[in-house]
Amino acid sequence: MELTPQIGNDLQKACDEKIAEIYQRLYTNEPNYGVSLDCFKTSVNSTLCRFIAASDARPSDREILTFLDQLQSEDLYLALACAAGNERAWWDFDREHRSFMQRVARQLARTEVDAEEIIGVVYEQLYGTRIVDGQRQSKFSSYSGRGNLRGWLRTVIWHSLVDRHRAGHDE
Image: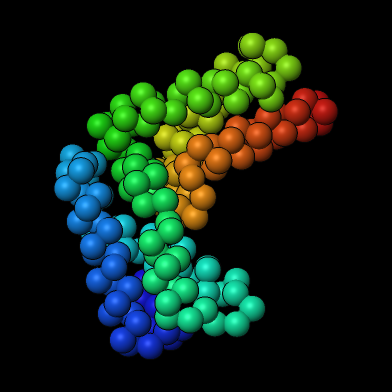
């Protein structure tokens, strides 16, 4: 996804270079995640397009480049790898975030059983057990890198609890 309609060619080139630089740093740290530069660039450009569209006035070139620097790129890289089903990324995600997710679920749920059920539901959504047009639909695909992954996970858990509560009332 190119941004050229929204930004000039010079800024597009600067953005592409910045994204490639960020990607290279991430790839150097985790080469086994299987995230391609094209995949990473597409995701970052999508987030950048939403940032530009949400602004009252078009952000300056400096603001756009600063925005790229402020992305939670490590979290985004991990999320993209998990969305693609990379086993190594899933191991790292589980090691880094499972206990956090369990704490959040216990704080928000009424019982320990509810908390464990929600964690199972969230993991299922994150992994993407639903297939559409041959593509696994992972909840990770909606993570943009604008906030940290743990904040996003907290929101996903909260929404799952609310959905579960609503489903109980509907019955």
